[in-house]
Image (cartoon, rainbow, N blue to C red):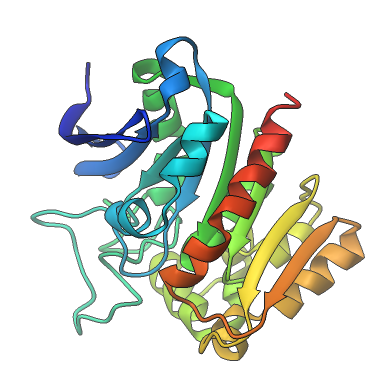
Length: 282
């Protein structure tokens, strides 16, 4: 087995694991969390991916979101990767900014120096980690879905749109709807990919939809008290893109909720049940 167990804890009849492995894509050791539900003792189970936001590791969602109880009931494996490569020799933002470098991989394959060597989170999430999980854990690769928060919401949307048919369901909490049109995204995409904005389009959900990518439907929750709502997240751009493309979008503007994990914890059960319903149809 190529996975090293960092920790494991019994939880709602299943087991919450944290694993470490050597990644060929990033050239570093990577960690991810995996909640394995009790049903996995008898059969392979569906997989729900959760992609986290800026500054996060695999720990934030695992500890704060309260997903395990419902995942155990529904028989869902929940996989939570880290948000960037880490370790000795991995470059970071020279000013120590939270929105670029370590903890801010933006789920892209960087092409610019010095990032290109290690910052290959797109290939890691789309190819390497799914293959590893299918080989080493009791996961059913034919039944996968994906969701995320903020930067991870952007990641979930773009990965699903680029891999049509792989995921039975897609949802997001307060996603960065169009990185090409917000300060976080402009900084990340220019830094990792360079100044040619045509290369940015495959990492922007609204641009991918405009270019013909599709998903069956989409659930998004967005807090109205989110301090990043108008400047960074801009859900109206995703709303417009889905409307023009005919993609059914359930966009729930939640009064008074902010950008924190209290917001995610409140609505995570809704999202897991949304995913389970669609996964069961496969």
